Length: 82
Image 1 (cartoon, one colour):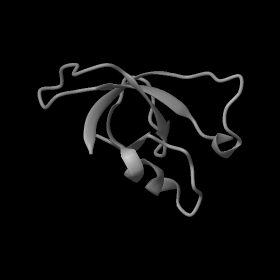
Image 2 (image 1 turned 30 degrees about the vertical axis):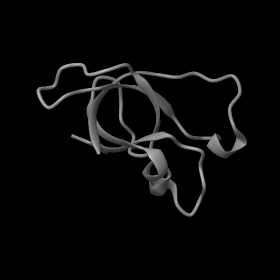
Image 3 (image 1 turned 120 degrees about the vertical axis):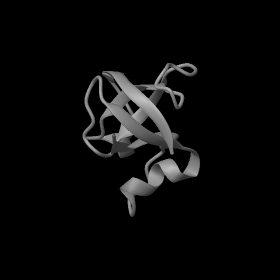
Image 4 (image 1 turned 180 degrees about the vertical axis):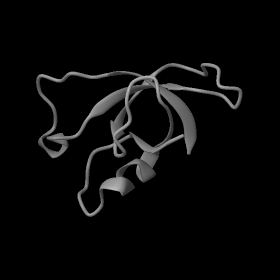
């Protein structure tokens, strides 16, 4: 898991049908000191995070695990609020 901060949300006019009803948020990765570390990423929200909150997020194959048994095309997912 990685540390990040929610800096905004994404508004989609069209998205994959599997993602219907799922929120997409913009996450700024953070280092261990809480400072920005890298470029922002778009992540699915599995916990109801909001703007300005510090969160845990994961990427890769594990990003789809919070939504099992559904198989969502996720590359990054918020999995916890700090």
